[in-house]
Structure formats: C-alpha cells, structure tokens
Amino acid sequence: MSSTFMVTGALGFIGSRLTEQLLDDGYDVIGVDCVTDAYDPAEKLARLEVLREHPHYRHSGADLADAPLDDLLSGVEVVYHLAGRAGVRDSFTSLAKYRHDNVQATQNLLSSVRRAPTVRRLVYASSSSVYGNADLPFDEEGPTNPLSPYGQSKLDAERLCLESNGDCVETLALRYFTVYGPGQRPDMGLRLFAEAAIERRPLKLFGDGTQSRDFTYVDDVVAATRRAADASVSGVAINVGGGSRITLLEVFEILGQLTGEQIRIDHESFARGDAMHTGASLERAQRLLNFRAEVDFARGYAAQVQWLRSRLSNTGSVA
Image (cartoon, rainbow, N blue to C red):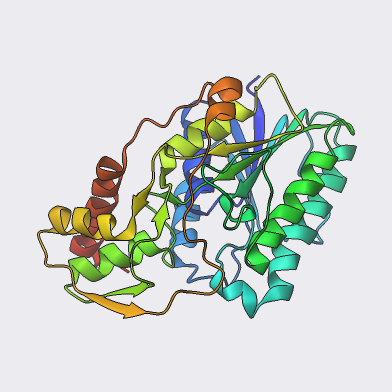
C-alpha cells in the first residue's frame, strides 16, 4: 500500500507542483484548497481539472480555519501545509483575512493533526518575510522582525507549528525565499516584469532597483519540502533559498536578454513592508536536508519566460 500525503494549498503555485510530483511517484494525495479571493481563481481551477484526472488524487474544498478535518486526515502519513494567503502589500488593508487564512487555519489544522493517529509529521511552508531587514545572510537562529502583517502572520503560524512538535506529531518549518518559475502567482514581481516585457509595456518598479532578493526556483523548493518529511530532526525552522542574491536591476538586464526587448521602467516609491535585501544562510538546509539549489536564476527565469510565451501563443494573453 502506498503512502498517503495531504497537501494544503494543493492548487497553488508550489502546492500544485508538489502534488504532481507525489502523484507521479505513485503516492496517494489528498489536496485541500478552498480557492480564496486572493487572486483570479482561473489558474487554480484549471489545475484542479488536471489533478482530478489522476486516480490517486482526492480533493477537498474545505476552509482549514473552521472545517472539521479529522475524516480527511484518516490514513494520512505526512501533511504538507502550504495553504495560506500570500502577499505583503495587501496585508496592510486585509489584516483579518490574513489572520484567518494563515493563523487560524494553521491552528485548526494542528488541532486535528494531533488527534490523527497515522500522521507522523507536518511540514509547514513559512517565509523569509519573518526576518524583515535582518543582517545578511538571514540565519535561522537570528532575530525575526516582520515588516508587514503578512510576515507576522507567517511567523505566528510557524510558532504554532514548532510549539506543537512532539505533541503527538513531529513538525518542521521551511522558510521559503522568493519562489519563482513556471506557474508563479499572477501578482508576483518576476511574473509581472516578464509579462510587461513580452507585451512591450513599461515595468512598474517600486524603489530604485538596488534592492536584492534570494530567488529560489520552484523545483528546488519542492525538493527541499519533500526531504523535510524524512529529515532526522524536527521542531526547527530551516531556510530554503536559491543560494545567491540578485538585484532587480540585474533581473531586468537578464529579462532583456531573454525577451530581446528594450526594458522600460516606470519608477514608483519603495513599497511599504518590503525588505531591502533578502539572503538565506543555507548551512542548516545543507546539513539537515542535504539541500543545495540546482537551478540558477538565469536558467530558472528563462523557463518562466518560456512558459509565459506559451500562454501567449495558446490563449492570446500571458495573464
């Protein structure tokens, strides 16, 4: 009998990729995703159509924050908790939604997991946003100082998970650093930049472009997430990053090369809640997960741009 996994946020950018890989490897997957109003649900619903064709996939549209989950967890061995409301800027005006989708949902899920006799581990998808403007590189033992309600909600949910370690279940938190690649959320910068370049529109840039990010390719993130299920340790947070930083100005240079377009930029003031720089210390990930990112930024972004071009040729729009 194959193992059964639960993936919350199974229709999202990372969750769908994880779900597909687990199914391809012969596992049974229970996907949970209530398809919120965070962004246009069309891409999620399209993924659901594909996943439902797989005989080993079962879907639930339960709202994790208040739905009974005990029956769904029956027979589940590992829970990958990737569900949540993402986005820094919207969190300042939608605080209640972020608390509901990130904190309350995690609390309710943990309560059910602790009662589930077959669940041995919960892997939580946290975020580099918990660090704020910390000293580089961001170290898991260093201070956390979120700059937004989103970052705070991720930190609060992470703490709930780690405090539950050993209470009938093992838990591990992975702090993802700016995940990108084909299928990226439509509100994320790298996708918006590429869409604008392909359609020969100016790119909207918040700030002067000197801010830098540790971009992490989605397949590398999925690899680390799967390894976390069988890690020899629990009860800790682990950074998952791409291994190098790149400024947004450097991103635009690469994007121009990939698209063959002259990049035009519309500058706006720095966005509230955005860190100036992010960069992961990966010593713990290498030691505990044997993780090292395999896809460099230029190659990963090329794959994302190609995916967007394919959407344009198939649908007439990259959006």
